[in-house]
Amino acid sequence: MAQDDEWSDILSRDLDGLMEEARGISQDNVGTDLQCFIPGTMHYMDDHGKYPTISITGSACALNCDHCQRKILDSMIPATSPEELLTVCQRLAEGGNIGVLISGGSLPDGTLPWDPFIDAIAEVKATTELKITIHTGLIDQDTARRLDEAGVDEFLIDVIGSEETMLEVYHLDSTLEEMESSLAVLEATGKPIIPHIVVGLHYGQIRGEAVALDMVARHKPYALVIVVLRPIRNSPMGHVDPPDPEMVARFMALARFRMPDVPQALSCARPPGKYRKRLDSLAVEAGVNRIAMPAEEALERARELGMGIEFHHTCCSKSF
Image 1 (spheres, rainbow, N blue to C red):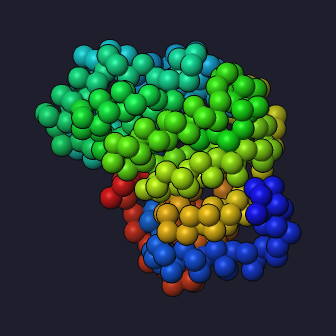
Image 2: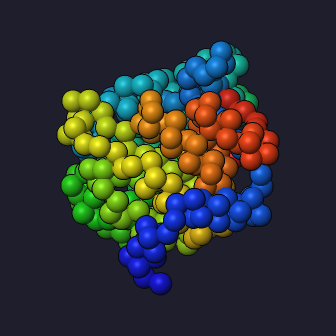
């Protein structure tokens, strides 16, 4: 079935029946437990995460995407030189953290400036017990290989299925072929790859998400992380509405049908308040296996469904 036809079929179905079918597939193939995560150093129910996020570019990003405007980078620990990265990681290890997520802003071509930092990453792995997760951006084969050899534990990558969205939202003049090439070279390392798909990235609209799913499904992901557009104040998307929670739940079902045995996670990056309560409960209904900082309503629903609940002090992408 063509992508548009398949998505149209998902949209036409009764939501409760759709969620029940997706949940059944999830339980049969992945299990009945709900894994819950406290990412970064965020606080949740008198506890906090032990997996801080570091930016190798500080607050700098050449793309200045419409949905972020560099503001997400402000929440990360800056480490803009190899020496600073090593110092920061060693301090975080001494502070009892489990690992670090290393990310940063993009260069004009959608890549990150990994080259100067690879030796420092290898040194972190040699001198600490930290797990290292890399959020790659677009990446070539040589860089992926060298990061793998440095000891990176897993790779995260945002997957966009619309060239129009790449250009209009990310200000990135790239192609779907380049996007999928990044997935391929990461898969070739043999390390876990955890793609992220942002639902509603194109100003709240569902555009290339089904195409992104197709790309992800071709490259044996360890898990899939579903992110939901969270409009940021004073950004070009500050005024837009995120996609309805029910629409996100339908996309979760589509992802489950495409990849029945791949763990599915709901990212911490999603709208707050009543939206979060509704979406988190729907995610449980749809058989999502992982949720970052779940709403209490979702935990209650998971208990009603007889699901086990386990908490981790890492981001929901973490392989464990």
